[in-house]
Length: 273
Image 1: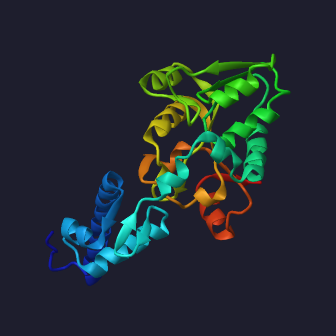
Image 2: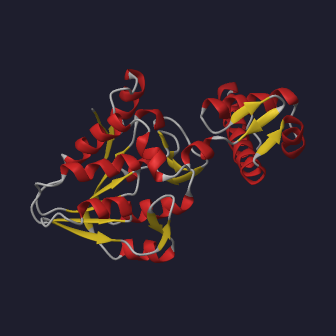
């Protein structure tokens, strides 16, 4: 890009800054692609693939570690975060159970008589079932087997199970049939989860088959509630799947820092418990 003779040094510096930012983002995507396919990457490999210096490579890895995208090792980095998040349902259910139950109760407080709602398959959202019992003429549509099981004996709640391929460890239905099934309904409220959210990059996940269902739920709801624990806020998983504007309300716990809370309340409706 050429600058006209009348353009200021400030305009030139802004262009250089934007170019640097774009190049860095491009490298981050390339690093995530390489490390996702191979499980790890060495600094020397990164230098060769991206044509950058050792100092730049190490700075990139440090910045991505700070975002929670990878974990640095001696001489490189590994993508450990998916292994921490993609554990089976029962193990995740036991993690921070008190905090998740409080969030489940908070989410359920927004459900009214005669509502038709989606509930995503996350372990935090699972706890909603305990606090829905007194609603009248409620319809719950979900791909979560544990939620279907818990609500099946409640005569006041009509429960609709989303069809599709069953993942035994995650205890939920996924795949093209499930996505099509979700799209056949329209609901008043969708309660969804994600592995991360950031102001700049929106909602992100470590599991694209889960996020495909989540996106369909959000698209077919009048009102969308994202229900996540605070450590996932301003964290990014490797796959972005929806902008922050997708959600109307962010429900989280009181461990969120005041600085981050202020940042989000300026953008969306954030409620903490």
